Amino acid sequence: MDVAAVARCAGRCYVSPAFGESRNLRPSLSDSRSLEPAGLKFRGKSQRRLSFFRRIMATDESISARRGETQQINGNVVWHACPITKSDRQELIKQKGCVIWITGLSGSGKSSLACALSRALYNRGKLSYILDGDNVRHGLNSDLSFKAEDRAENIRRVGEVARLFADAGIICIASLISPYRKERAACRALLPQGDFIEVFMDVPLHVCEARDPKGLYKRARAGEIKGFTGIDDPYEPPLDCEIVIQNNRDENSSSSLSEMAEIVVTYLDQNGYLKPS
Ligand SMILES: Nc1ncnc2c1ncn2[C@@H]1O[C@H](COP(=O)(O)OS(=O)(=O)O)[C@@H](OP(=O)(O)O)[C@H]1O
Ligand SMILES: Nc1ncnc2c1ncn2[C@@H]1O[C@H](COP(=O)(O)OP(=O)(O)O)[C@@H](O)[C@H]1O
Image 1 (spheres, rainbow, N blue to C red):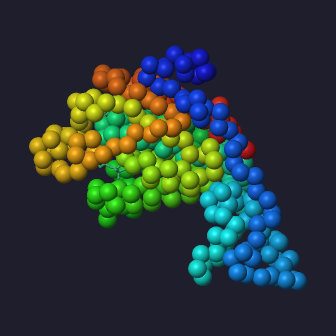
Image 2: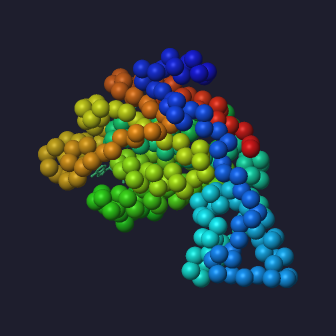
């Protein structure tokens, strides 16, 4: 789909102009980083070994972007770099790792879009993996509730896992309510600039509530579920996300799902994620 086609969908979906051009924005890395500010001094042979170590570390883009020069050592734990880098992995699978972060109310269509997007990418021979809030809460995050601190921890963990997938070269699709701006911003900050693509499912509460596929809104209205997002718990819509999708069709139209997926695929294509760096 071309830009004009994206514009034709503008009633429901649009790409934020503020972010539409964000390609190749990874910070340039220099070999000048040093462990010395962290208190380590290397001289002679050790200095040469350190140069090699630095060279390896400098190729690990996502980690470098995330951790400052002085943060390669965390207490007694030293970052262990591997000479096979993100770039190597991306070259191998002919795509660029990134995170598509889909946020919105329960029933807004996050999981549906995630699946449609994964299918659309698969059809183009691109590898993606979905981290869905519902599913992750069955395993990794099964210890977390829906109180604010636990939602924050849920989002933090998924953000960290998503970063690892992106570092693997995979297009990671995270679909969580993720109601708080601060936590979404923290996940964005884990990735090199441009590699966190936030998609807002902009669907009014009454539409989500009318869908109510799991009957949760009904139970929340009846007071059986406390702290339900949109009912008696907050949702903070993004102010500056890359893509907004107004998914408020009520009919069971699978074509709208594939159209929405195509909007995201177009964004990825135009921003260079569907080919190696
Ligand atoms: N209290 C409360 N508030 C909101 N949602 C609730 C709640 N309790 C259970 N559920 C169901 O939990 C599903 C997963 O939520 P998330 O992990 O995405 O939520 S969060 O990001 O931690 O806020 C979420 O899935 P989706 O409906 O797919 O959004 C809900 O169905
Ligand atoms: N564009 C769409 N076309 C048809 N049905 C949709 C569309 N978007 C969402 N739905 C339906 O709305 C309900 C909620 O979607 P879902 O993806 O489970 O939302 P969420 O993951 O945000 O809770 C599901 O029954 C889904 O089939």
